[in-house]
Image (tube, rainbow, N blue to C red):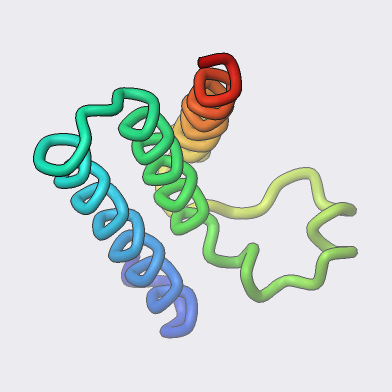
Length: 103
């Protein structure tokens, strides 16, 4: 993380902070306010997607055409971890939406 420019460090910190805030409020809502499992699943999915977005801070500063042309955007840390977080978040959010629409 020491090799990142300041603006990319800022994006990383903001994404992790927002993700943590969403997760904490989602857990609080689940435990204290309403005991609805599908909302907790969606909250965890959003948390994972924001964490994943924070691991690719160049995404926020690159033009869309460059992103679409490139084969991969450099990540902070292991790219497989970022992909796993992203896919898990999308799957959990999709499951929560389907669950919400079905019931």
